[in-house]
Length: 209
Image (cartoon, rainbow, N blue to C red; front, side):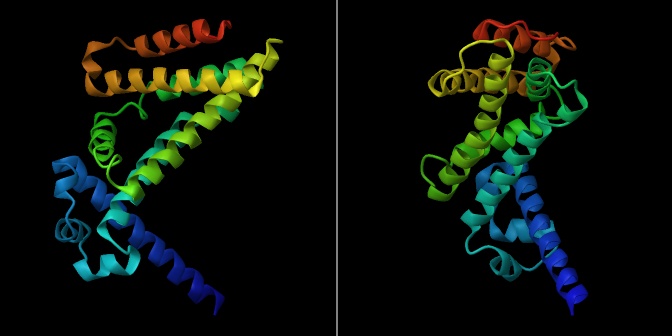
C-alpha cells in the first residue's frame, strides 16, 4: 500500500510541476495574457480540465509559477555557500556574487519577473506570493549581514540590520535587472565587483573580492 501512495504522490507532484513549467513558458513567450488555460494545457500536453484538478483557478496556477521562479532564484543565490570557508564575510560575498551572476542573472528569468510583477498590484494571490518570496530572500540576506557585522564586532541591532537588508536587496535587484536585460554591456566579473564594492560601502566592511 505504501509504495502505491508514494508513486501516486510523486506522479501528481510531477504533473503539477509540469503545469507550472508550461505556465512559465507561456508567460515567457507572450506575457501574462498568453498564459490561458488552453495554451498552458497544450504546452503541457494535457486537457484543460486536468488543470482544475491541481489548481482551483488559473490565477492560482500563475501565482504558483511566480513562486517557483522566485524560490529558484533565492536558492541559486545561496548555492554552494557551504563550500566556502566558515567566515561570515566570505559567505555574504558569495551570496552577493551569486545574486548578480548566472544562473541567477538570466534574461528569461528577468522577463518572467517583469511580466508577473504587472499582476502584483491587482491580484491578491500574486501579491501574497511576491511578499512571501521577497521576504524569504531579504530575511536570508539580513541574517548574513547580521553575522558579518558581528564577526567585525559591529553593532547589529534588528533595526539596523533590517534597514541594511532592505537597501542591500534593492541594490541587488537593480544590478540583477541591468545584468539580465543587457548582459552584453558588462564585462565578465564587472557586476560582481560593483556589487561587492557597493555592499562594502553600505556596510562599511571589507568584503573578500
